[in-house]
Amino acid sequence: MLDYSLKVILFQILFLAIYDLFLKKETFFQWNRAYLLGTSLISYVIPLIKINRATEVIPQEFVIALPEVVLYPSTVIEKSVTEPAQVFDILGIVYWVGIIIAAVLFFVKLFKLKTVIQKNTKQKINQYFLVLLNSNNAFSFFNYIFLGNSISEENKQQIIEHELVHVQQRHSIDLLFFELQKIICWFNPISYIFQRRITEVHEFIADAHSIKEIDKTTYFNKLLAETFGVQHISFINPFFKHSLIKKRIIMLHKNRSKQLLKFKYLLLVPLLGGMLLYAACEKSDQEIKETSTAQELINELKAKAEGKELTEEELNAMLSVISTQLSEEDNVREKEIIEKLLHILAEQKRKKEGMVKVIEQDFSDAEEVPFAAIEKTPIFPNCENAEDSKLCFQESVQEHIIKKYNTSLANGLGLEPGKKKVYVQFTIDKEG
Figure 1 (spheres, one colour):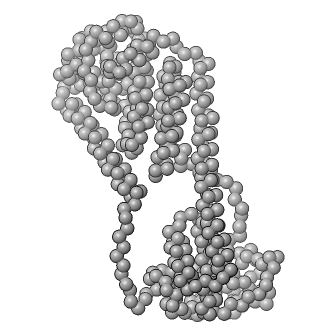
Figure 2 (figure 1 turned 180 degrees about the vertical axis):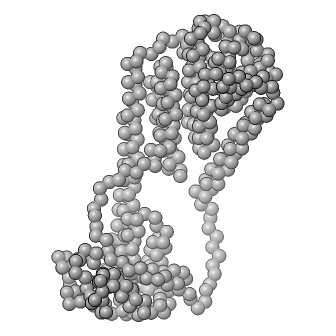
Figure 3 (figure 1 turned 60 degrees about the vertical axis):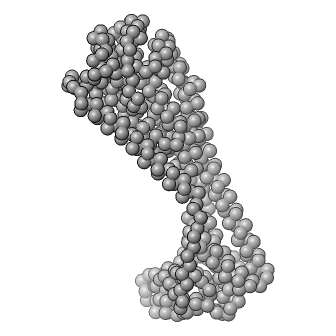
């Protein structure tokens, strides 16, 4: 989760840098709106993308799954183990507490807005509701336009036309989209910057529509001559906001950008390619590192197991540690390696204690064929007339092992109570 969050923040920083450096000053307002919404969403998706790489196809081994064997020692000693709190557990708690607080603050604002609607007079006018406030505020939220009675009649219609653009283009959905990000990733400061950028674009869009019917200078003289109040709610579209007024005036007096400058948006292509490559290479490096570490462990312990006689304590310790890793490991590649190592150590322990008689014969690599790949399977007794000889062989071997397997053999191995896996591997020669 921590690694994923850091990638999201990194990608959003890069997307925002492209916007601020190359796109922010252009008059392609709808394109900028789409860019901000799209890139903020893509930042959450790219870290989840997995690029499959070509892998070697290995014949599947023939495996018989036996029933689980649960070991119960004569006396079970209960141990009380107190483990120190893990860092990731603490971070998880902090994360969920942050989400709860952010969600509560959001719903408090939403409730406040609902209260304003209920307590004030509202009129249904075509596609929107006009809510009359006993103040000098002016803002909109979805299809509700809030207008203060203290605002002069001369400016009211102009403000309504401005806010109607927000209503028609559903700008409130954009703001709620970033509110959701601020709840889920409350610790991500870039989400707050994205929301401020999209708010600017919303005002540029509304202003561009408003000045079609009125001169630019007249429009802003009216705007600056009026004193407006401000509602401190991040997901509404305020008509007047001190931090935006200068930017709105500059943008309205700016000449329209040339269409050729839209090619700037192609900067997104190499940036996306680099992000995908980064995510893929990081996964590949991690897999190589994990496999290399596991293989080194196997080589070291295998050399130790084959090079000298291991003590009882060493064998039991190795088996215990590896068995634990095997049950908890999620990585398939490393799990297979651990299984092989477990087989090596278990075989040496069986040889050491003389529990089984191992008949060893030399088989060249050319003579060995995986069971799943052979065309003519060995015939188990009573399977001569079976329609599916492979299936009959599998069922018969399974039944034979269930009958012959002595579960009491495990009592002297010093294993911890619980479910254990037993691995059996053998080679069938030409004579059966």
